[in-house]
Image 1: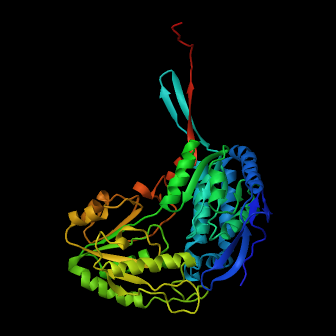
Image 2: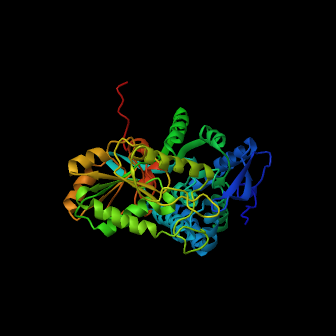
Image 3: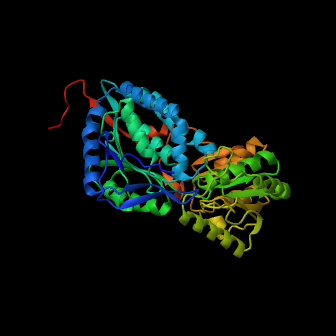
Length: 484
């Protein structure tokens, strides 16, 4: 099973190879098979990417927004036309089942391109009257942007970052995760086919050193990262040295609060989506599930029943509901957390072991109950299919406990009392929240975190603020009144 791209990089409108860069093997997580090899970007590749982006961006900024929009819209249409093949590639790259990638990955990317295509022509300035004189504002692109992707939603992230950047007149150099390097290359080729001028969306491969070279280059105006908190701290510091604009979407340990008047079926379904979708490898997952004691037993019983029916298997089979973890390293990390949960006294409800499949990095959907706030599995981001269920008595108690974390990416509340739902959401320290739903992220809505979970927002109209800047122009309509 092979998925070898035409070359490792896509720069200035064409495929580019430089085998002097260190090789990076692409592993299919369902079998452990090497399906492709790409090479890290050499200094020459990085220079070609940045130079072509800087050159192309000036003309792109002067292009009418509606003309930019038409190109993005054509790219969205091409993605939708090719979704079956793109979804298969995404499955090979990540191990996520086709049941997910056909509906959640590239389709969300196409939605982002379509949304920002529609938004681009509406982004305007304002006029501020001052009596005789007045001020008008212009909203201008930032310049060359760097996007650094994560391995869990590699193609969606490439679209989410590039769509607003391009719509608002910027160029982007995108570095995918070295674990999942394939999808962004396809996006670059689609952009060119849709009519995007060469140089505006370049893809270069590599590990941390390549990212560091990009974010510290003086030609770069903005950095957008999706990744872990430790990586975010490094990138943020490097970008700050050059006073660059930054958007950071980092990790989480998000609370999902279930009150005793909630629909148990709906709450269980949301908890499963918020812990087992993509084998738990979702940054916004509600991995601390607080269940009010009045429905705890019913909730756990139904959760065990439904979790036991999850179909693990070949990700290329559309009947498969959960695939493997992305890598051997991630598998060992998750199994380590499961062992820690047992050792610290959490009660195992279901799962708790490596799945008994012949190959691949599979872990059983795992639920722990009687988890306390001090346990490791309640404090640290696991990024695997491991749910921690905690008890609570009162609204005030659960709100305080839910906020007792350095993270603040997401949160959810299930209750039939909408006044309480809004009250609790208002008190939760999180950037992206749900009421009687979980992990739905339409591109029309801003997405991002609070506290150590990040800064800035992706998607929605809020993204305009993070890929453009305002220029104020004072217009004097009379003679200059100077005291000299």
